[in-house]
Image (cartoon, rainbow, N blue to C red; front, side):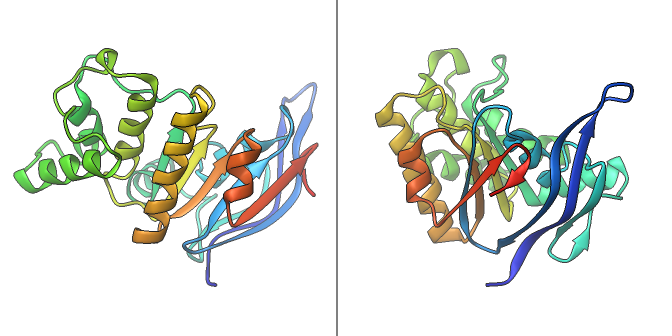
Length: 223
């Protein structure tokens, strides 16, 4: 399987006077179209690792490559363009905008890219809401949706620009077991039907065991 993400000798140190090393010489290859989970105790470095993969944070040293292109030295503008085009993010706290309705939230990545939203783009947003099991909530405000529905809208939003990679940080952390299972099934269906690469941080062992690969991190080291 071809690699879509390569991390080479990644170290991350926070602080100047008092230094804390969170990641220690990480080497990791993620296959294109693969379905992965990252597990580990709180404070082990999971979220830092995910943020570096998504270039929400830069490593102190080492290289980050996406499809063979080194991105850790790119400008902020270039990184923002890559994140908006190639990477979708799903977080434990969905970060939907409450002043907008469901379909407007899904359209937000495209709105950031272009002020013009055409009919085809709006149809795609509707199709994505159907894909995540929400065909009838287009005009519902965020506060009128359940927690599980809000997370599904966040997933549809992450897919709006057809990203090659989805990075999910505890996406089921605030959901009950039934909703968690539904979110996992959505992720897996997208992975199989579209070939999107998934990397999911989770404390839920049931979810982790269903992924194709479990990456365990302890004290900043992949074990």
